[in-house]
Amino acid sequence: MEFRLSDDQLELQHAVRKFCVETLPIGGVGERTEGRGDRSSWRALADLGVFGLVVSVEKSGSGLGCLEAAVVFEQLGGHLVEGPVLWSTITAPLLTGAEDGSRVVAGLELDLQSGDPVVVEHGSQADTIVVLCHGGAFSHERADLPDPLPLNPLDPLTPVARFGRFPGGSRIGDGETAEHLRLLGRVLSAAQLLGIAGQSLEVARDYALTREQFNVPIGSFQALKHLMADMFVRVELARSATYAAASVVDNPRVGDPDRAVRIAKLLSGEAALANSRAAVQILGGMGFTWAMPPHFFLKRSWVLESSFGTTEDHARALGAGLEHLVA
Image (cartoon, rainbow, N blue to C red; front, side, top):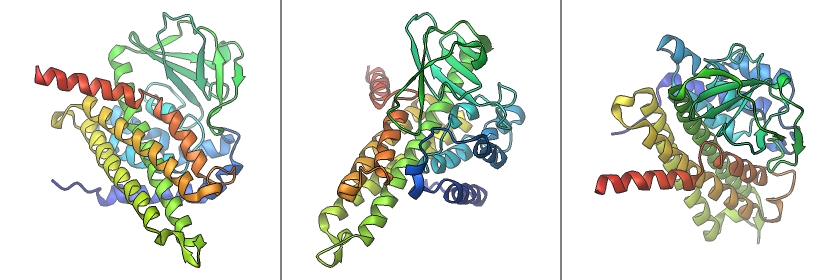
């Protein structure tokens, strides 16, 4: 069966890509090191409708769905958008102000019984921090929490803060709601990783077509052709899995949503990590300099790969499912 995006979905993809190219040019990513940007850029994302992608389905049962959200987040991921966009989007149906951008929402998965300190991405910049645990989803107003300890982030575009033990917070959803948020978080983080994998290929290809050695573009060298061919295959596999997973989330009758999103997160995580490493290699000494995108791709891939379950976590879960089928 051949799957294709509809004309409306392609138009949405084009519009978001145009917005990202104009407002978040990947060539200038080295200048965007503040982690979240100002409220005006956040408001621009709200005006574009990013934070309401899930709300339309949750409230009305029609309109845009998870597949459209995945198409958008692929573009946002590839352009390394700053801020807790994913958490603000998936919690918008539950928290007033998230959809219009007036409330910035960060979040994490946590066992509330644990007394260990926790690290929260964008914790200092968020208005609300949502915690997902087995008992449900809980919100914490940032103003009610003690000042966190800022830490040096792995990704310079993803600031982190260390908090002590979280209090109980306000319950905004039960265990089923928390699991649904995890499902959305996995498929949208997979879409972001897919975007990084695709953009890594684009940057490497463009560089290989313009950089010359021995009076010819380095892209004509067979070794680099093999590297970029492998990058292309990873992108297509990850895209197929991610779009399929988003479609299953929209219509659970056609498959197992949990299994589908785990496959998507696994393949997209592997693609983003491998492609960003390959981009660094293809750009050579330029690849890891502050002004060039590949090392930013790699760092963001490490961050996203650990969100909503690592590739190893999902591989184990999928393997356990296969053992059950065999038994």
